[in-house]
Image (tube, rainbow, N blue to C red):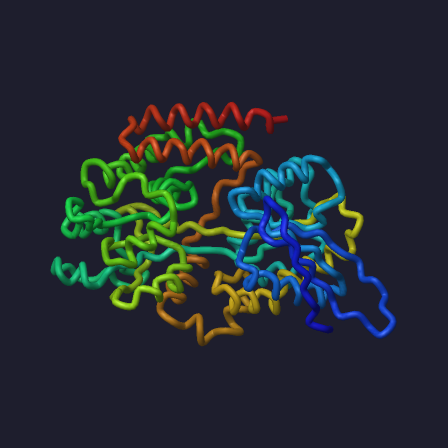
Length: 423
């Protein structure tokens, strides 16, 4: 297959539109064209992948890259119109149930063989499954590490957190170290959770204490996010900002968090693997990584989940869409995606194929977490509503609001929003 050529167009409200074309034979026969919506990854990260999958599937792809902040609204409008396009589109893993229940995803159980499914990490399969059916095909996943500043630890005379998952620090140990290091008046902080107001990042605190984020049917938050265990975990979360003053309030943008750690003003950062690359820009920084913390006496839980791809069931190019999606999530393309982006693969075969790279210390931790401690975000058809309401509650708690009353109010609001999904 040819590598294709790329034609770019610009619109006022989206990132560049990229038309990916296969090379034509001497007497060209038009290949079918698929309309694809993807999140606004850098062009160098997504275009080569789409080109490769399009060539393997013998199709052309009109790729529209939508900034993350506009993606969900755009998809709601386009899919809500119940038209045949986009043919394929990016699915944030926890949105699978929401799209499926509204009839926006083609079931994929018959598309992939049992062997192909077994090659995916179980957490990836779980995030793409609703009502026991696979609706979105996993592309990449995620995990978290505890990054620490060696210089700040050494100045305080504190031993580094161990890299051994069997000796991982508890949250109690994290706070003890953070309180010894933090000097808020000098702009030195002890600990920051990277996505400090997002359920993705914060739910594992509650889950470590045995709390659940939502009811088993995904339709009720009351009794779950306002349970005693959840309240206890969120009280701990609040004390990071208020009583202990080891975390700065109002730091909600990920690049600002990375900069705080990179410039030597933060002792510990619980964050994504992309920091392994981002922190290379800070040449004078001495840092290490350790496993995600847990509460003493509690369960070890780590966040996971990321981007999947789905097929519009109303597409007029179903056969071509299936062929493209199978190529896009294949082991070959999943390995290519890792090479392009360093994002965490969903395919077990990629980890075997690149065993040398994944034998390095950070990845050894991550592979253990993905196999043993990773828990996807709650499975609910109303995930957007759930996330938005809980996110605002987390911001309020961070700023000092009464924890129990705030969570009770959030649970009641979520229940009202989820009522429309009850049959």
